Length: 170
Image (tube, rainbow, N blue to C red; front, side, top):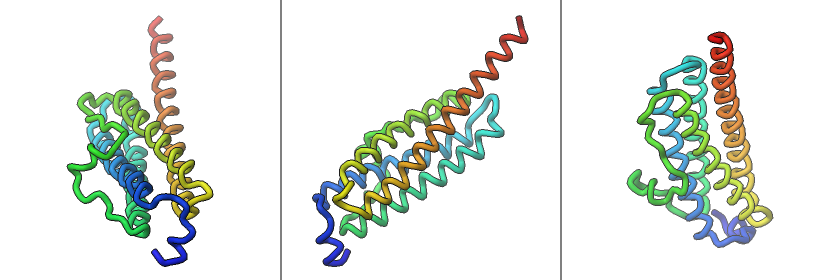
């Protein structure tokens, strides 16, 4: 980053890089959780939900790219090994040991809610202090909110389908 770029940042760059490396670790874990869950998923609406989860996975990977670029711009080093992802992440990775669609969706929903908190906190931390990071974080936060809504909608659709099936059996 250039001299002027460094002058306009009003946050501790090392602290910010630490937060961003945690976010980066969480993005990699989210990518894999979406990707592997989509591949293993079983149950109702799987054929409709699987391609959407793969899109979410690709978007999480895109977030990782943005975060890496910003860490480098700030003069930092991105987390270098997957072994450190779990150590740096505040968001849990839940292995899709139960491949039922609702279980996969609920695991991903928890991940999205954690990501929303991460990026909301980063937005608060950078607002008015680091315009570039703030814009990046706002963009990512928007997509994380969309992911949460998508998952909530799918869970609601599955619940509605189950209720309708119960009515037919009566």
